[in-house]
Image 1 (cartoon, helix red, strand yellow):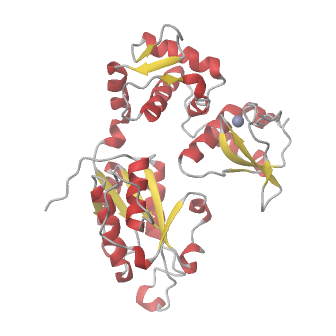
Image 2 (image 1 turned 120 degrees about the vertical axis):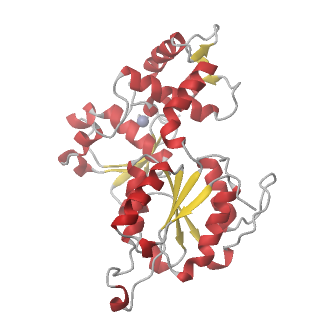
Image 3 (image 1 turned 60 degrees about the vertical axis):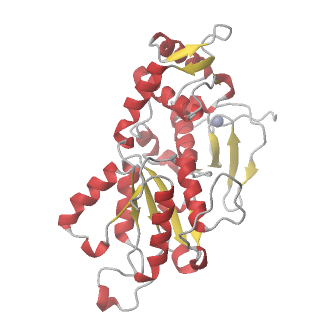
Length: 346
Ligand SMILES: [Zn+2]
């Protein structure tokens, strides 16, 4: 335990921050906020001070999405970033916080329904709900217990809690819009060179209990757009492949230049906007990697090579040595969205 405090939430840090490799900034690992990079910054900055809870919640959200080094720039204070933080959908009212906290408990418990959550051991709960401090968590636990969504252990009132049957019903209702289907949408470049990738992704998706949905971009026009929007809305998650290749014959495909696939980015933006889980993949080649737009380069990407595309998947019951891309993708799906109920015909 060091004596250094997190400049965002003031928690004591277990390890001192380390200098960032590239920028004049420090990398922090805070028990409450998570991991982030903070540029040399006046800590007394009024706007920063006023927005601390929201910044902590923002870092937590980025970490949950797989970005383990969200960058807080000194320039942010001059921008509308702080104002925008207020419109990013973090819980503000007490009811939003109650719902947010209940969902955070569901994330911790997963399917271990007997699990007793010792809330003091989860400082990230505070940033999950953009809360002030641990006392607020205890207060919200009391309210959740009054609503009969939580059972609280008498020896540790409002601190050791378990989700009740009524609580699970509430969680189900909260999650329904995004959990309405076992569809998985694949956003990718439709090129014959990616046929094996396509089969491999379909396999990983079906093994995990989801139905792969893929719409060829040759059909991309106004008519099909509504359908795409509908599918992305319904999808439980989205696989986004950023593989591309520069166009040489511009005349043959006048809309695609410099190889970046606009349609794929459009679908990604839509999915992120709807709060869907997005799993990014990309061919492990220089051409594709260098074209990943900086908006997406901050999220974790699973890179693949042509020779590891397979439609064979070994059982996950035992440890898999040297997993192929298909196996790594399936493991990521199970880890982030869990198992679906779809059974592939045949
Ligand atoms: Zn912190």
